Image (cartoon, rainbow, N blue to C red; front, side):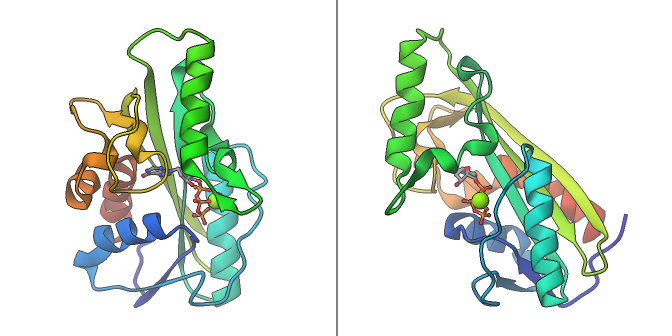
Length: 202
Ligand SMILES: O=c1nc[nH]c2c1ncn2[C@H]1C[C@H](O)[C@@H](COP(=O)(O)OP(=O)(O)OP(=O)(O)O)O1
Ligand SMILES: [Mg+2]
């Protein structure tokens, strides 16, 4: 396992919600974080069919373009009653000609569960795969998950993305109702970061 021993780490994301969570999760390590936007990098096409494949595309593109180590997060929600959809297409479900509409995406998820008369609890899991890549092409991969269920109606205005319909296992509030510190203790992203930190920041 290769350690991160630089001063600056590029967070290869265009998602502000993720970026804020990642900044909190890495705050104890005194690393200077920059993002794709700071380096003027475009959003690469996510053409793979797995979280790890897409995380690799994003991390290696940023590491190569900047000459710095880069960390990418590819994530999504797998809903059992929808055979694991939207999965790697979680962001795509929110795409509109005018940008992303997560309310529309959450309504679609619930509507499809209703149409299939899916049994309760409507189990799902958030998945996050982190890839830390270096400019020489080396990388390290760290997966994380948080199981829970899809609930309706949407609850909470914190967090981002699908947080208002995801109630993590063992809780009676959604990620959308949770404060950022609590979410960052238990989320799929937190799970992956624990492994990244143990492996590369230890
Ligand atoms: O904690 C989360 N809470 C709510 N929703 C979440 C979360 N984590 C991922 N998600 C959903 C929304 C996101 O749009 C999609 C990931 O898609 P994904 O391609 O990995 O991210 P993205 O396109 O938003 O940003 P980028 O690729 O630039 O990192 O899954
Ligand atoms: Mg993306």
